[in-house]
Image (tube, rainbow, N blue to C red; front, side):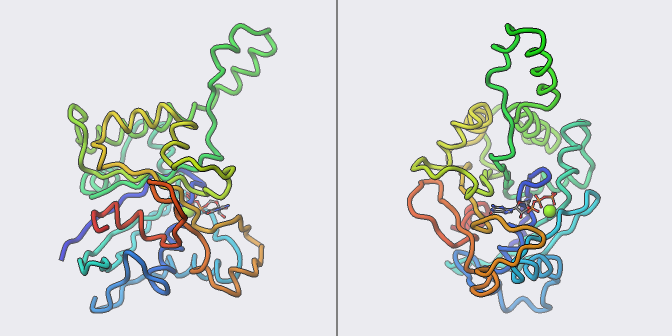
Length: 282
Ligand SMILES: Nc1nc2c(ncn2[C@@H]2O[C@H](COP(=O)(O)OP(=O)(O)OP(=O)(O)O)[C@@H](O)[C@H]2O)c(=O)[nH]1
Ligand SMILES: [Mg+2]
């Protein structure tokens, strides 16, 4: 039996908790590429995920995770091909990751997990990411327009922020980038994909279009078969803290949500696919 660590990298509001909750529902009620192992002895404590799933069963979203929180769940998994692994999967307040990039300081807990991980899942919610492709052009404009540009530049361009974050995390976890990386595997999950205008592009092409510098950094530093980019809609649609969405209530959360695989093509309702790929169990 192999014990594997996965790491989720996602700032506040990037979709970590809802993906974890929906994974739980799939593993429990509608297994796909991965399912929960029944022979695992003591049933694992999945109460953190159960709570998220319970909110979804009532047709509403789960709460934002408090910034100091870090909770690991241990998932006893088996792949369709019969390979058994114990996966340690974290959920945490996204502010922690934001603080790492802002203060350029990485706690040892983070460092150890990053270094030991089989794969990193980078969660990017494109809808919430700001870029300033026109920042240079704006410097030639009037003083008032320039003030507006300066105020906007108070927050980082998402390309720069995410590249900086990956560089920092690779550095502290001692993954050198003199050679393209084959470990950790990197799955980029473009979350809340239902928020984007429908298109026939592959998720990778969408990422290249929206965050070109991030995509080139990844392509330059990982082996091609160690990276994959997915469209992920854990919920399939927006929920709020007080919604009572009928489809979630009647059909169950396990019938909602989908992924768009890296090669494009039809959506799959198997939300375990990116995880199976990340762990090399596809
Ligand atoms: N439209 C849409 N909204 C989603 C989806 N998944 C999550 N959301 C919403 O996105 C928001 C953030 O999702 P969370 O899973 O709570 O994000 P998080 O990364 O855990 O955020 P923190 O706990 O703050 O670190 C919530 O309001 C969710 O309702 C999705 O697939 N589609
Ligand atoms: Mg959360």
